[in-house]
Amino acid sequence: MASMGAFLLLFLIGGTAVLANRATRGWLDTVGQGVNVLVFLNDETTTDQAEQMVALLRRTPGVAQVQQVEPAQALARLRDAELRSSGSTAWMDDLDPGYFPRSLELALTPTSDVSQRSAQLAERLRSLPGVVYVDAMSDGVARLGAWIQFGQRLGWVVVFALIAAATLFLIGMVVRGRETRCQDAQILLMLGETKKLARMPSNVLLAAAGLVGASLGLLTLRLAWPPALASVERWLGLVPSVPPSLGLGESALCLVLAPALGWVSGYLSTPVCDLADA
Image (cartoon, rainbow, N blue to C red; front, side, top):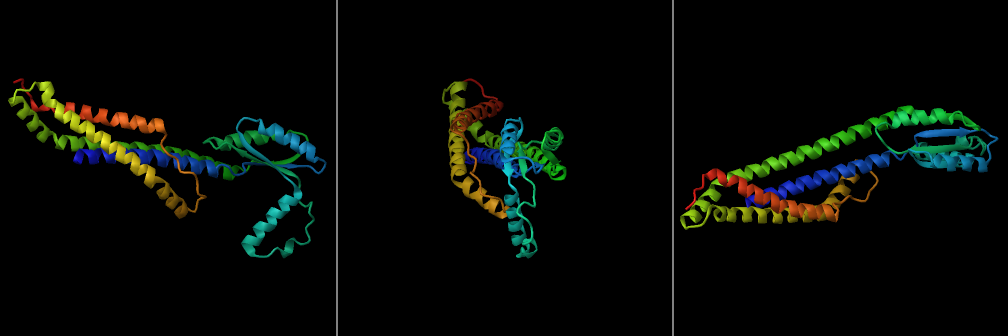
């Protein structure tokens, strides 16, 4: 029973760590979908010319999204933001609908070097005809890149640390039950069984414990992970996302590795009992 609990804990912690790492990367990707480069066009740039630039930029490697913003749309955004923050837009009543220039908003694929890529892309865009000003939004982009890099490293550290802790716990449980398994093997030897058959009960028992523990761990993750992730996202104030899950191939691999690990654990822990042939 203790061995089954150890396997359950191992796969539960390992699976939770992997899923949490994937969820964290999903949050970082969502954060990275903001505007990284803002391109202002001159008044002579027509809508067709702006659409051609959008089509060209969408084919640029590393650009995830491009959106054309019309002057009236930019003014409406400012009005909405001011209304949410202060509750009044009276000072904007005299603004002309064409107060803002036509612009393009670029969102880059979030990576740890997004700050350098944003600056390089902005430098190239400044030489295009019709472009008045390019804002690489370097401060925000640099912070985003730092958070992405930190999140990726922290995620992998947590994954390996939790899996290592669960593995050590499993080893401790197997070692603690070694004496009982040795006594059972000695009894079988005295009854005339060979050394190989004397070890068999321990191997089968731990293999079964591994299979049952892994199955319960996967079932628990499937049922408990989505509501747990939703609670964390509500607590952090994040937009709800589709919870990541383990694929069928990954689940099948766990169900194969668990009994194999149990079998090997039983075999390696029993020979230290100095079994002798009958």
